[in-house]
Amino acid sequence: MSKKERPTKENPRKEKPSKDGADEERSRNDESRDARTKLPTPIGQRETQERRRKPDERIRRTRERLGYALIALIQERPVAEVTVQDVLDRASVGRSTFYLHYRDKNDLLLSQLEGFLEAMSTALSVRKEASHRVVPVEEFFAHIGDQNKLYQVLAESGHLGEFYDLAQGYFARGIARRLTESKRLSNIPQREVAARSSALAGSLLSLLRWWLDRGEKESPRAMDEMFHRMVWKGME
Image (cartoon, rainbow, N blue to C red):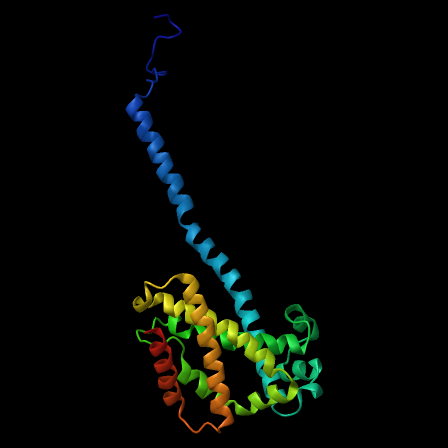
């Protein structure tokens, strides 16, 4: 060993760390780095989720206010006399905001009808009701009965046909979903399920017209029972 390399008391020779020691040191460094970076991650995720949720909630509330305003107004006066500005004033929403969501008042009305039909046609599947029902007829008829004035408004304004056309499609899809979920029809081809669902949706709407034209003499529950007798008798 040369004089230059000889360790002294003032300049002791540094030993090269062993492989195990180097691994341990790297492990400690990794753990320290993880500890520094791990904590902020959930906070950032929560902030991102909040940012996504707040705009969606604002949009939902805005559309809800506009919908409620229009429904209230068309029950007070003919649809033709209701303007977009009337809706904006009632809902306390700006014009530019309105046109971000809808083309005109008819588009808004159509959106309200679609929202109602979507909720009604999927209600049983969404809440996983364990029953033989394929449509919540009692709830649907009760709602229409309670909103009879709105039904009349739709008829007088020429929008009732649109309502029935929309309802046919929504209820056909909802009934098909319930029939598919039912174990009673596991041997029926999907094409036949779709055909039966469309026919049952048409029967439901015919039954609704009949019930309304007769002055709603039967209770919504009685109509529910009647409809489902027709459904399952036809499946035998």
